[in-house]
Image (tube, rainbow, N blue to C red; front, side, top):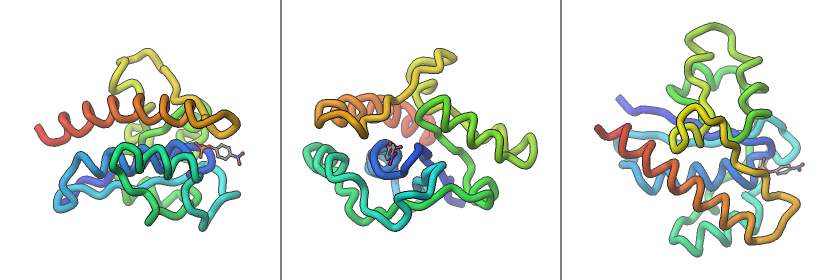
Length: 152
Ligand code: 4NP
């Protein structure tokens, strides 16, 4: 059976598309499904932000087949692990969880790198390309650990 992992941010155009692409590139598609969504639906149907696409491309990761969508309650049934990018996403998703089992699936992604420190992936939307590169590096480190642990 495939393990299904969902990456969640606010708009699903900057951070979570990068997280989806990076983790996918580290796992076999045979055993894992990686997807992403936003807590908000304003960008539904759109491609990832041009800066996310360019940053991923610089690292050899193609995220242009992705389209933004809003998180839905059914995602709690579909996915085994739900990684959020910041405390605001974390609280928003947790507040939608229908039961304890669903709550257990929700994690802050950088806690994989810095356990229990609740470090956030900063929202790069209003900044420049440097912010996207910084986000990429953080997510790449976290996803390396996630991939290693999932394939143990
Ligand atoms: P993301 O970044 O949550 O990393 O996709 C954002 C994208 C769009 C907006 C905010 C954050 N926005 O307000 O439109």
